[in-house]
Length: 236
Image 1 (tube, one colour):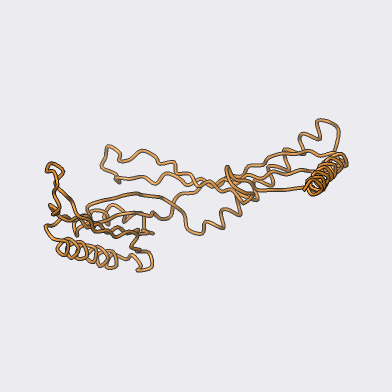
Image 2 (cartoon, helix red, strand yellow):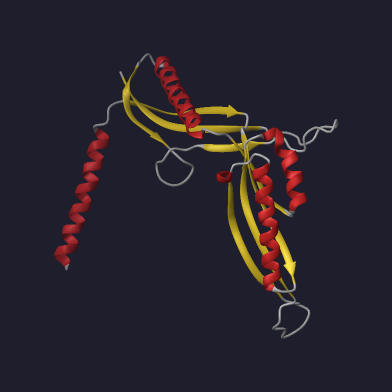
């Protein structure tokens, strides 16, 4: 047992010495963080909506909810929303008891909920569609998210800007010291948490809602896509 522990300790010391040796042999480096940002007007909106129904029996609650959900889907399709852009996301049926009475075992009523996510690609039709949805049975809106199509294309654009920004920073720093930027020694895209995978923050900055002249009831603002890269250049 003691021999095994000794071997393990020796291996750990060897690994430490290797790391220290590698660090001592590093070339002169300039390390910087580059940031790239792309700002866009949203091209579509993702709406989370649903139907909540309360009835005396479980079957009645389920049937009424299914009926309203079907009406919502039909309405959306008739108004130009593709079937692939409508997705049921949550379904539940549960009893509701009268909390004021002790020992009650029979439900006072049943509540059924069905929610779905809908992608609306024509933003100028948003107000009209939302009003119509309430009219056919939707009675809850759980979330609204503005976004852009072809997001990967804009991620690539943000990444290129981040790399260019890093090169600019490194050049400025080395020029001030009378040196030159050489080849790239290491490059990495980082996230605010987790492993070394690309970081893209999609932030929503919503502008003011309705204007005083009866404009649209919601404003998409802009979508901001940000990429950060850490780059080390060899100093020549």
